[in-house]
Length: 491
Image 1 (cartoon, rainbow, N blue to C red):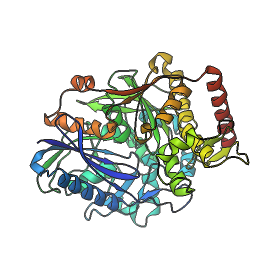
Image 2 (spheres, rainbow, N blue to C red):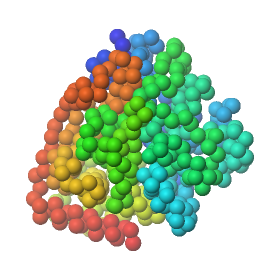
Image 3 (cartoon, rainbow, N blue to C red):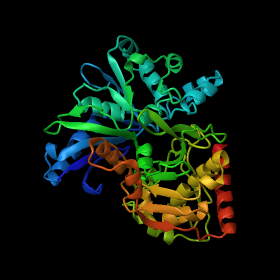
Image 4 (cartoon, rainbow, N blue to C red):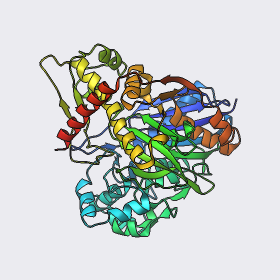
């Protein structure tokens, strides 16, 4: 039996999945990760814990499958994007905890950069807005705030990477300091038009270019690992949202997917054209094959599935995530609660890193059911924010069907509300592991065990289509209430 191993290193957990020769997930292992919140708006991970979780889950899934290294054709890696690690080139030890993509500690520095007029240059080269979300200002913070980091970087003793780079460096015992174009595109240091790290931006951020990894296509030779008992090539890498775009077979311009994990991320394939958004969306690389990037418009929501995690771990009104669907069904229909989950600010199209979460419409009769319903609805409202922005940039005809994936899509209630509030069909695929499937296909196709792009796209299978059932009047009333709640949150 030949497998492809997908390592899905996410914000809240690490998973190792063995895909069989038919590109079906056959065996899975998962380990949750600790989240560290040293201050309000700060979010950190222990990079060495992440590395340890990869070792544990890969060995576990291989044991479950009675799989030897020679049974694995290749490895694909998908990762939480923008999360930033600096480590010692010689020891491999990180100089600080990984600063997570949700972290907002560089908000004031970003404001300084914007006030100095650097925003247009950054957008033109990277497709990104100046925001703490991206890796560049996180690297600057580490170099400026960790004792000895700046001088060590200037001496060539430190390396930077997003999580994919760090894992590959560890897996190859320091032989490969690499990333792929999709992850590089999220650093705010990479020129996505020229396809290279940008000296002007690096100089602006006081980041020595010597610490940056080599950038490859998504399907490429990233090195070989002997960590799992034998020699296995690493042939596929993509940031999690781009991996989901690939896994959803959104290869044609105009195709749209949205992933509901910790956050929510909608990507619209724009082909060879890098669309400059008028509505504060991001231009990014969807994937890159044979040196040619395919671009996308992206809308990023910081809090989606993690609002359910907050209900469980933060305020304790649920014990398991799947309780929320029944709670929403049993909520008092006469109440109109709005939960704006701006726990670390609001992403697209608002980009306000300073606002914080709020609940509107509470009455004496409001309880856990109503809060759970408002939490699930917040994901639909935020998605509508993104789609309206996309429609403003490219036209209504390109956003008629939404392909969805991620943990929240298992909730029929949530997906029906999503279709209702969007007034558009929502397609849920048969294989929900689309992020892992995306990098599995990258690695497997590069290794010659999986089919070409067209054949892969033809094998995409629909599980269920959710058609809108809500009246236009109800839809507009609900969304107007959401916009009012956001306006109040922003002020």
